[in-house]
Length: 306
Ligand SMILES: CC(C)(COP(=O)(O)OP(=O)(O)OC[C@H]1O[C@@H](n2cnc3c(N)ncnc32)[C@H](O)[C@@H]1OP(=O)(O)O)[C@@H](O)C(=O)NCCC(=O)NCCS
Image (tube, rainbow, N blue to C red; front, side):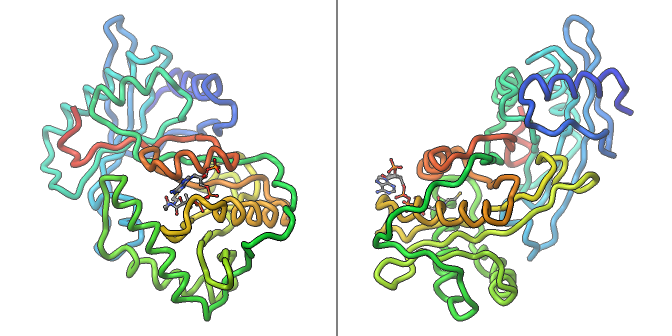
């Protein structure tokens, strides 16, 4: 059991690092790991393991076998986290993870002292959850780009543009799933049929960019409430511009229309995930008003945790 002292320290630490990060509601179930810093402060963590079946959508962003640590590093800055990660390394000696595996931790992006500990143990910031809560940009004068909701008959264009995201992501991250688009196809068809907010930008009548979006309610007790402040959030899933059309303002025009639509539906804000190693999206999203809230740290295979 994680004690009250560590839980209170966690709440104080998260709030001090970033007041927008939701206060941790309680402790998850799992295997308890404990450690102590050189000065004798006791720290702890909960370890969960998961194996995803072939064909599940989670495999688009996750290794097949995952060891996820929920750290409670107390108030000792880098040191408590470091002690805990060392204990985790020893614990992993009892496992034979295989190549499609990872050790992961999700942690507030702005807790700077923890970053050094993650890096020292071989973890990399594979992804961030970023939010935008500002007002939408003003309506620009009509230009070359038109933005509209996609319809079921746009399926082929939507699928081809979705593939562009995966093709590019595969170049700039360590994870590639050749079957990514196949995994996505049933959901894409369902979303288009249901009139989900999947947006297309067209240049001269030709589809040049996609923003596949949705809605997420962050209500007490839901998984979303552990990551996002309460409210109704616009979710920006896949976004891509065709390679030859990038850098011409199409992505910006598309997202301006999406942000105006979210605001028109009284969204609390919008959120998305991007890879810090993606040289296009890591610049593009902050310029569209997004800032990191959570960082997803990962080392793969899981046996490579140092
Ligand atoms: C991220 C992405 C959707 C942006 O779309 P876009 O239509 O290129 O966006 P914009 O042209 O509005 O803005 C891109 C920025 O990069 C700059 N840029 C310059 N040359 C560029 C080039 N050859 N390619 C891409 N961007 C370029 C643009 O000038 C612009 O910067 P600015 O804000 O200073 O003007 C697009 O780069 C893309 O499809 N990337 C690959 C897939 C991807 O990473 N998706 C996001 C996953 S989270």
